[in-house]
Image (cartoon, rainbow, N blue to C red):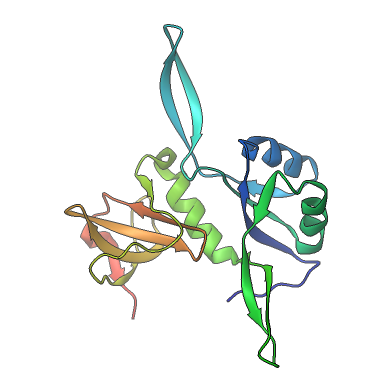
Length: 186
């Protein structure tokens, strides 16, 4: 588990409500906070015209890098707009309480790499938990457009995919990675 102080900038995952992800992203950027939303461009036909739109790969999911205390204050003023992903923290006395769940820089780097490369066309969203498929191996991509990504190789619908997860938030599956580009991690 990654720990952060309340004043340092950390990444946090948010679930936006009622189609407010793009509006929240804009508000955060006005505050000078870094944001990330996994998007893919899709062509649509509207009124007989071809239109290219950015569509979220993971619906309603938005990441923001900011101080935890400031995000908590912003949340109190915009309570019906989004929720912050949280995890249980256990005290020395055995008690537990929920705290905002910061995401490490490395996890975000890998997630951004696999969802932004090739405009996210190779990425498929699989929910918040690793799907139950046959056991896979932990690997690192050593060459190609996903170089540096780490994840688990699983077979899904007869296709070998690399699963990259931010625990409790999202699992993304990437296909079309040649085996010679993968290296086992012990």
